[in-house]
Image (cartoon, rainbow, N blue to C red; front, top):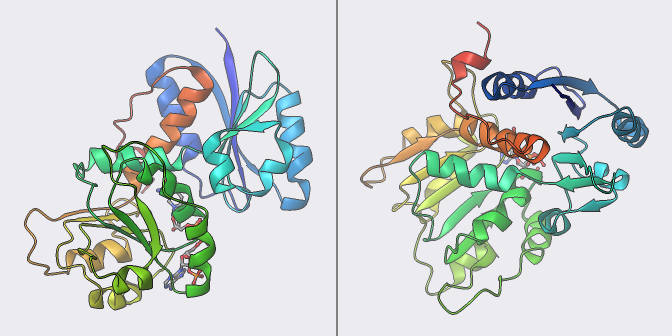
Length: 289
Ligand code: NDP
């Protein structure tokens, strides 16, 4: 039986849950993998990636801070990577031997939302944060045709360059032409309808960091999704804040990003092995006491 040589590269890397997740996938799919965490500094990234694939590597996950720099070491990339300028999944293509870069974060989020029963993402969406994670999810959210995706960030100047990366998608007349705008533009629009879905893509560490959102039109928010995730038995600051919001909305859903984490990993696994893994993984299976 073939053994897939796989791994994840980052700095730091010892916190990564990816080795455990992929080993669970492989066990359940009854295939053999060797999935290692690699601690690599930016100065060594290019030679590391080339050596990894020359030594028989099939696939490599890329995490912080290398998601942008890894593109210097690849031969080709997917349209999403071209748009967002970052990747989390590198693959050695068997037919051409080229190293190919893809990003599974956005689709991982979409699957995480669906799993949390957040199916209705056609209404206006607010994303908090304008860093790498925010940029990696906007394109896939756009393909779900919400009316507007608004972005709010602590450092306001960082939002406009992000917005300009995501012009409206020219699909067809059946769908609204999703606009990506900064929060000020949204608030100044006369027809702003208020948000139904609020996504936290910041790395804010305190519940108080979300207090200012209470002045935004979030009264109708029913879906709160945090890209950050907590350990077993703990809660993220955003989830704590969201749970405390008495917004009068019925059927409030509040989730952290554990589902997204599993799904973005599953999509990488499928790219490398052709197998859709069983994604029913609990926090108890991944976090040690
Ligand atoms: P970046 O460093 O690229 O961006 C961080 C963002 O958080 C910036 O917008 C920054 O604002 C904002 N921020 C940081 N501290 C605060 C604060 N105290 N108050 C308000 N805003 C703040 O990080 P990433 O975008 O890569 O990651 C963001 C989060 O998403 C991380 O927690 C990461 O773990 C999570 N993530 C989860 C994934 C999953 O699979 N579940 C996948 C990828 C990421 P400013 O510009 O003002 O500094």
